Image (cartoon, rainbow, N blue to C red; front, side, top):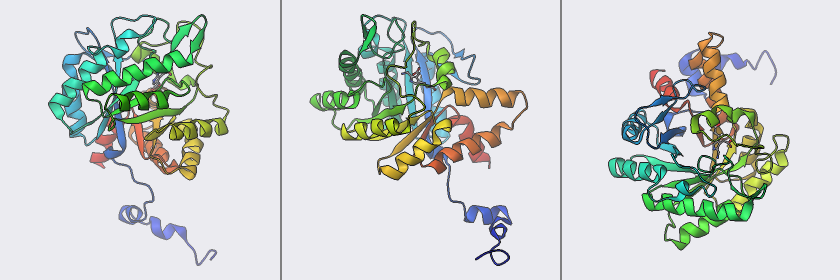
Length: 326
Ligand code: PBG
């Protein structure tokens, strides 16, 4: 029915009318809020490249979680920064490690009022800054997944709800699922960074988590950003290995892959809007080139519209406030 009978502007006449026909919704319930906790820290430290993001001492973590809960955000993603790094990444699976301590402290204080997710990786914990165990000059896949499984089990013992492997080792989901089940943690879920691309958008995070690789790069394990079908194979592999939630990462330059995953699979999809996406917006807003509120909401809506069920985002708190105000 062409113009003049069809006038699409009729349903855009007022804010209420636009609400009525809104096809995508965005709410604080869609967010997973990253939290950085650093061992042996006395006071919060601002992350220079990520305005308003801080590394917290353990003693500040519960305050932060309270704020996140009060904003209506249902989940956090914990990243730990240990004092001790070694070749085996041993602080990552220490039952008294910084992440394990944070998990049990949060669980004790807040019970089931927050979904506790934790990153399962080695890069913050290894002296090399790589996401796996090094043998010679290669990252040994099969040795690495054994360690990742140990990390997941130690986090499960501390009371984590969901472990989130981000190392991009083949078979990491299967290894973790088996180790969790063998240790009786059959209800702990896995949200894998399934299609994690080798991206320049991670640079500010490496500042935040002190995990830049000391040599080389992550090209031998992360997916090349040119390869969409390879990403879909990663997602399919993880589903085959028993993952509960798949992830596409980064988000904003990868909306095609989020919608392709939505089209192909019925599993819950998370999108990780990474540090670089955040840093670009914050920097441009501080320069007055864009309106922070408007651009933040537009970006998050677009990630939902592409098909994500949830968004891991450094905007979680600020966007929740914007949504409450609107
Ligand atoms: C490492 C890890 C990275 C991020 C999450 N986990 C960095 C990397 O792969 O170098 C990036 C997150 C972000 O940029 O916000 N396991």
